[in-house]
Image 1 (cartoon, rainbow over the protein chains, first blue to last red):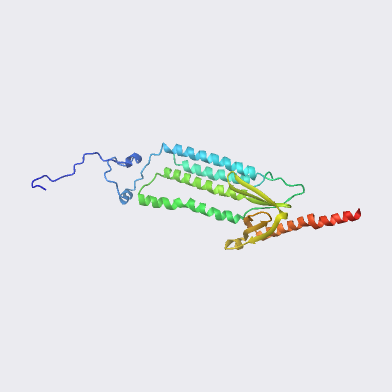
Image 2: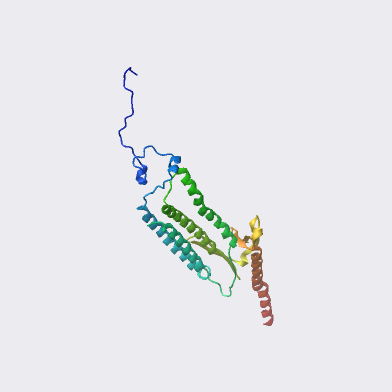
Length: 110
Length: 184
């Protein structure tokens, strides 16, 4: 290196890119370096993920699968075990449990 | 019964299901799967530092548990829709392999050659269930009733039915024919 030459310095003027910001809007825009696990846990701020557009779609798909499944189940029980005392209670249990789970799923959502 | 027609004079002697203990055993993996998130989610939060909102966590857990329940109930449906029917003439094997995959096969008691029961390992002798294996003439594969309650009792029942059938069709009929011939 020549004598008297200026000391090279890193002068990056490009704006910091925060990829996480796309998914975690509450994260600071200029977050700088990615925080380590311990650093993040130390702040313990819950990250709010914006899934508002995804949840209705996911729920609709899940509900559709559940409806088809339930119809198939009811068909099988009534087709092959209609004389059994178990058919109606079994279907009732299925409806109760899966209904409760769906209520649990959406209970916290607005 | 819509799946098979009873012949004239044929009566259903017994309907056999798998032992209820087996369904309890089969629920265990689903129970483990259901409890798994309760262990994984705190560990995931600790290691990644991502704290999902409570509502989102409930939604994801709810979806997961719903699918675990659907799988468990599918197993339950298969369990209850699989059965064996012993009639005075034959044994009917009705197996529900999956949804829309149901097989009904039957064979005459007169073709039964050998009946074997297996009650082995830990739970079957304690709980009282096992395997009943029926070998028939002219059928390559053996016919199995897996996990039925008290297989010895079912074996004796089948043997009784076979004896009655042979008595009715064989000796009894021959005696009747001899008497009729003698009276002529």
